[in-house]
Image 1 (cartoon, rainbow, N blue to C red):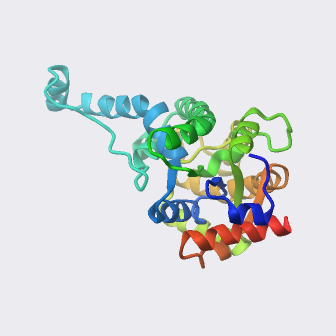
Image 2: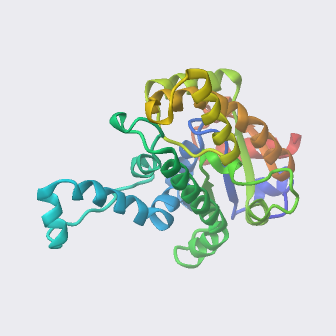
Length: 286
């Protein structure tokens, strides 16, 4: 969409927004708040990935695990039981569990080649889900009558686009359809996210060149083979570096394709009107 002035934004009745930034800084909080206020359609990129584009991969993985159990194997083969993923906006665990972590299989790790295969599946799925955004804007209006639209993108959006390429196909499609808004965190926010991650390390998607470099560096620094890697230790070790890697990419996305609001301001928002005004203030200053 053409970038509006602050006053044009305030006076709009049908707004189209895409939120991006690090996970844990308020994208889903804002999206749920807007959806709850009425009149806003909420499109979650991670949910779309986990249902439309990786749903079969996730369920097939469940079935492989079930086939290792003789009791469940016989029931599956006779179509006596049904296995499905219960992924929701609030619970994306089936997707992250499928992505997995590389390392020692006795500690739940995946062989690195398989891990990279699943990473590539996620990359293709994320690009496809992002490119579905304009289609969902049309569907939201045509089927449900929603004029306003909020796209809650995943934290890894910056890993599947080139924010410095003015012809990037994904960013072009998204910026044509929405106002892209970066929720910017501080160093203190990042430190808190690292502390949270350290308590409960989760699988996530990384840009391939970054991931391959970190894998090689980890093996060399720790002096271990691939099969000896503690999966949780690797993802903990990588996470803070991944956040540092992503920050300038987010910043370039905001500078070249959108606007910026601060995470500290987002925490003070209590309703849709507060969010609309916060974006208007950004349009006045960016």
